[in-house]
Length: 348
Image (cartoon, rainbow, N blue to C red; front, side, top):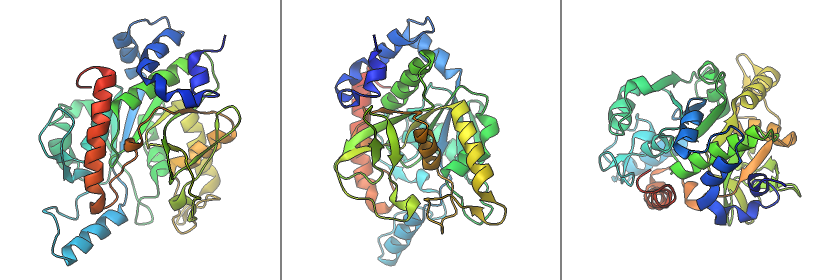
């Protein structure tokens, strides 16, 4: 009999959201590792997982919004040279000071799930002092990695992940999220546990992609008749307009099998990188010269190695790209955290 998780990440993906409350217990039941205690299972997985939080993006829309606010005399008390992940917002975490930096939500979502790597471009002391220390994360439990910018700007999150490969390539799983997202600790735990349960059953999967149903997703996912992702729309990456229509969209968080991530990063780097010129990847905006994780995802989808975890809240995809996004982020983060607390029991 086909496992519930295989169906819920495939042909019956549309039913998965209504089964969110049983996802972790089902992963516990269906894994073939002989583990039957959830704390033991999460401990097992944390020893085999690296959690990457990416804080090194250029953030041009963010800096432009700060400049516009300054020109209008309404600039917040915030040094514009600081990364947007350090901008203070309302704290709905249930721990730490209020306000707390935006990126605290992404960092806290990976609590207890593996070794931490935080990709940055400076500001390590401030991140330690303003985010990690208030969340109870000591320097011994994290590694910073500086993303180099050979052409004067970071060249995408795929390039960031490739650059820090020595810190994750020997892991079994890699979780990735972004410092401007309202990340959910429930989605992170469910994605890791479901991915491992599928892998333990020898299902062909290299990426489990948490997704939410949206009216007009900016990054829509195309599915085949088996409910498996086949392609991803990305307006910024392609430099083209994405057609507006209801559909599924990734919420930023990704759960990779580390060996699959490494193989595709290595291939894309070998095929499309040129010293002094950056990346030239078909389908990407030529002016950007970037390598995105979306490119990895697309190649995995070509091999039918991506599964959809259609259980995320739409609010998880509420990133802060400009000052105008802050109120919506605060409301979304409060909703996401309340939801995760209800599903995980108490304060996750």
